[in-house]
Image (cartoon, rainbow, N blue to C red; front, side):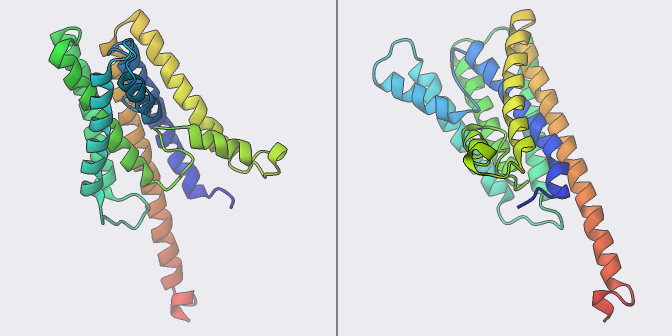
Length: 245
């Protein structure tokens, strides 16, 4: 199936959220004691390593990140469940996304004010960021573009390979898939650079800014889709249109 114009309009916002995930994971892994808060595949493995007795992997922090992610996804699921809109993205999804962006920004400010996370503050921040990522993952599903989930790219890489000409595919969705991979990597690289040149707090603030841009992008895409839907209804309702026949 060919990508639709409506799909394309949502990609900018989704790519911004994917960059944000790379940034947040750079912060949580490089500045919060080797924990993933967005990519749960790696985090599940870290929990497994910790349970096996690997002393180099912080089991508690990774386990709390996993629980936080699940809790955030459950809460977001409850908030958006059953919501509908004339477009594919209900208002509740955007409101939840605004909340996750505010969480990242507020966490970055708190980090600057309170100093480097340690002890309970570190654990709490890890769980909070993981919950925000879980909520973002639920919101991204509302855009109905499976190849750009904003929090994982393994399935995207598989689809990229399967749809390539080498595998007999048409490669019709290669732009979105490549975009998702590049966005995640770019976010991780940017996060690492910001942590090295500035601080984890600074990288987290930039992540929050990317989330905000993502929300704006999705909101703009929803607005365009709504206008197209309204235009279509107007044409159909005119004398001589399908509704008037």
